[in-house]
Length: 89
Image (cartoon, rainbow, N blue to C red; front, side, top):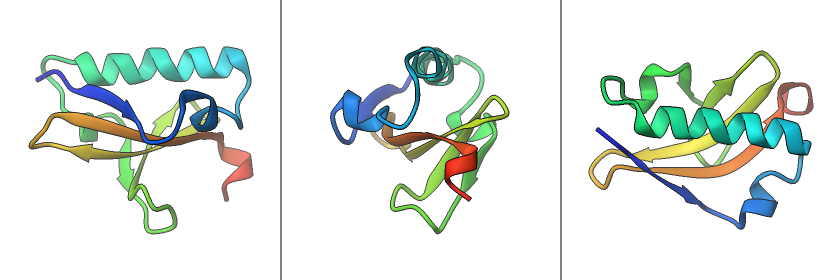
């Protein structure tokens, strides 16, 4: 199943806390997750969180987290924020 990616804020707002190289890495991972034919988004180190309005996060590498919500019925991954792990916890 292929998912669409929807940015809840502008792309610049979503990625304001990460550097350009990190943004490119996160984007490549998001597209990989969205286009995975045999895996669903929650199979990619996805965890529900109660501390962020998005409701869940994707782990991207050791240092980056992307806060998302996944709408299964409409096949959309809503991206709320990308940030370095050290700035979140």
